Structure formats: structure tokens, C-alpha cells
Image (tube, rainbow, N blue to C red):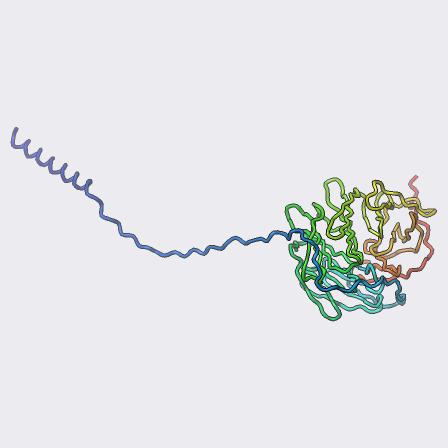
Length: 382
């Protein structure tokens, strides 16, 4: 081996050894800096389930019985000043002296048959409904709470499980000893529930009623013995079926009435008004019975039932009474049809407004028969 080759080979071995030492030696540990980080974790809100059906609340202290119904009331003077800025009328189911005229913002109540009114139960949220119990307490539903006026004292209490969005229907039921609210608690199913308080909102018991209560149409009453009668109109893609519910001692009985239009309950029978005119039936009967029109009245497809304790019907521009399967003419009607109501004395109440809609006010019409003009037959197109 030549000296030159030996030197080159030695240098190559040195390079290989150094490269092996560099790649095989363990790497020096890397220094890390620890930075503390604070993460705020907010737990998901706990949504309480709707109240379950419970037994009616047992009263530990005996409460007063409902007083007898009052049917007398003074006639309102012709030019008597009545509340303005109102859009609804509620008459007591048991006392002709208790009347409420109200709008979405304000409630005016009279306890002397409409001679004087006082603004009561102001509060947050729109007014959803107004009623009276059998003791004369004005009851108002606003923003998920019921307000009750007892003398000069006003209290507001929450209705548990009630949806408060404007899409959810809500209503009050009056006439009896309890505070009763019809509510929707489940956004997914629109299932209607009845909340009942025997102590002006301090405690409640509940009953599930029907599914798909997506309309605000409801009517009914509570009797002095606590029995509750309801007619609820539900929403369907092709029709608007109505259910007649009777709740006694917490037990719910149901009668499917079909898609029959507007329904009001009186005593042991129901009246309906719709395209087929005026019909009547009793709870549990299979068929509706036609109501006989008075002579000269052939078409009653636009009939509308007045709210209140007595059976009164608007057809065209006139009001009719109902008794024993027949309608009888009462008097002309020129105020709004949708808001017309009748009280225990038979007086008629409604809302009139200016042509531009800038003002609306309560009107009172006496319970006296007046001649009804013949219906306008309209132009002859033949």
C-alpha cells in the first residue's frame, strides 16, 4: 500500500467516526416555558321540565262559596263616557256588574255595571287575556304571570311552565272560584295544558289537554262547584277541529266536535256558528242539530256567537237570541262583530272606532228589542 493511499484512508475513517458520534449521541433536552392558561367553562343552562299533572290542591282552610249570580244592572245613559283606546270587552259570567274593557297595554274595569271604570293591573308585557272569578276579582294574564286585584291590592304570580313568546296561545277561564290559565309549555309539540290555582296563584295543579293547540281560540267557564268546561280549537293542515273538555275532580272527559267553526258553551249544551249556520248539541251526542232561523232569515252562514254568559248570535247586522232550538230577532248591531259581548243582564257591549282607526271606544246597548231592517240582498246580477 502506498503512503499516499494510506493517508487518504486514515482521513476517511476519521470523518466516518466523527459523523457516527454526532448522530448517535443523545440530543440535549429542550427547555420549555410553562404558561398558565385560565379557561372559563360555563355550564349549559338547565331548562326545567314542564310541571307534571298533579292532583287538585287540597284546601287546608275552607274558602267561601261562590255568591249567587247577579242579573240586574242599570242601563247606561245614552251619552255616558266609556273607556277609549280599547279593543276587547270581557263580561263576567256570573255578575252583570263586572265588565272589563282592555287593549294590549291597559285594562279598565267596572264593578258597578259600567257606570265607572278604573285602570288596573298595569305591568310589563302585553295583556293576553282578562276575566273575573265568581268573587269579582279581576284577573289579567301578562308575560307569563297572572295579576289579581283584591280590593285595592294587586298581586302578580308566575304561571309555572308557561311559554311567554307571542306565538304561543294563552287564555284565561273565569266564572268559578279558581284562577285558571290555558297555556302551551312544549315548543316541539304545542301541547296545551291547564293550570289551576285555588289560592289566587300561590299554588297550582295541572292537566294536559290536547296536542297542537296553535291557535288562541278557546272558550269556557268554571262552575261554582269547581267543574271546568272548555272548548278548544286546534290547528290542522286541512281543518280546525274543536274539542269539548269537561274536567271534574281533576278527571278530563273529551268530546270531539269536528271542524264546526266557532263554539260557545252554555249550561249543558254547545252552540256552533259557521258555514252551516247555527247548530247545537249536548256533551257526548254524535250529531249536531240545526237551529231554526226566524221567518225571513234564510242564510246564516256568516253567523257569529257573542262572548258572554247568554246565547246571542250576530247574523248580518243584527243580533238574535237563542232558546229551545230557535233564533229570535233582538235588535240591529252596528259596532264591531268580532268583539261583541253580552252580560248577565242581557246588555250588549262592543267596540266602535273611527273610520281611520285612530280611536276606538267601548259602546253599550240596552237589552231591549228593536226592529231589525230587512237584510240587504245586494245587486241583481241577472
